[in-house]
Image (tube, rainbow, N blue to C red; front, side, top):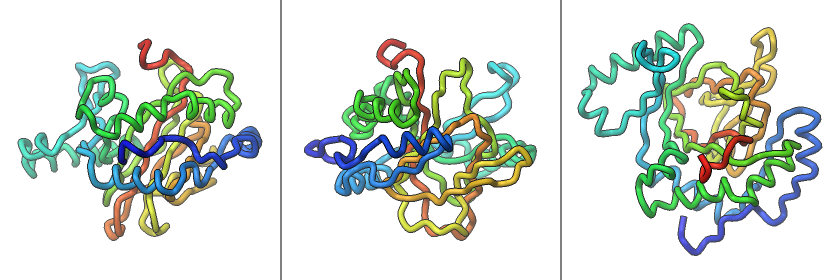
Length: 254
């Protein structure tokens, strides 16, 4: 992403038809959210310039709720060595067999922004845009929520073997208005896995969505959903920005 590009929604984007669809289905997939040049720049940013961290959750009796989120940098993994990382991942897989947990690469955009990681990196400009009046107002209009004060955001990369088991996204204080995923993945194939899946009350897959490019998906995070494991023969990585539209204090006031 270059400094000369203006971060803005596609001027041709009309929220009204998407608001009607969301009101009816609590789910929309909106194409061409950004103008092509900007979408290409963000794709390049996600695929080439981030310092990814391997993210998963592990049991920790001393932590609130008995678990903690682990973010392993490349340096962390080198210090642990192959055996140490392998032991951690084995425990992740054990928990996943009980339908709990996740494993993927992430760059936590809000934490990085508020903690001043990587000063001057263009990812912070993108974080600001996702919390700009323009983007938040678009979220309000589509979801019909009277109050959307901020957007959580993390960049994610799902490579071979990565997954997200079924769950719901209410938040601790039900502050999450709606979940969103902003896709920057080209030419993905359904057999590669990595599908956003919505499950019904019988745990059957009611809808499944292919990762796509320059598509913003907004849905009711209280619906049970998951991301299917990326297959060993996937021809690339699934790049997305994911988060929630929220109605609690803006980050500047937190």
